[in-house]
Amino acid sequence: MHQSFGALVTQARKEHNLDQDELCSILGIDESTLSKIENGHRPLYADELLALALVFKDWFEFQTENFTEDIMADLAARVREFLDKTSFTADQFGKLDWFKALLRRLDHLDVPTIEA
Image (cartoon, rainbow, N blue to C red; front, side, top):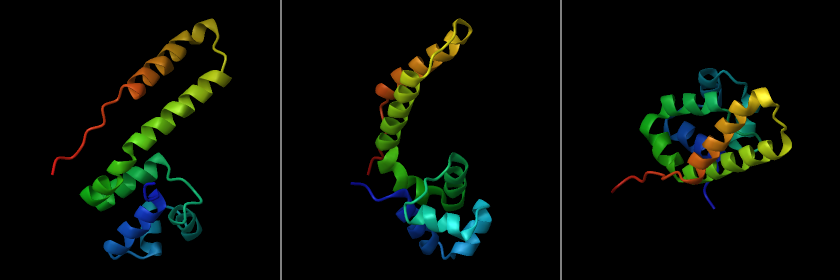
């Protein structure tokens, strides 16, 4: 199994000589939230992931590349679950078509790899 995002956040923070307070300030979160993220008890939100990518640049992108397939599979599963639980009215069929197109793209996604 892959290393968790939380463990990567901790590793990145330490390798870049940041303490929790400094990273919290950058992300705009409190220390208990960061602690939950680092311990795997809270997921990263998209804006936090983007901020981490900006702060840690190539290091974070390279470290998280292994998660790409897992993230896409999880997203596809969540979209399928949403579609199973959601009824669309006639005026919302465009949304349904959009979700179906998204699933097709996720199911056939070619994940790029880094060449050594």
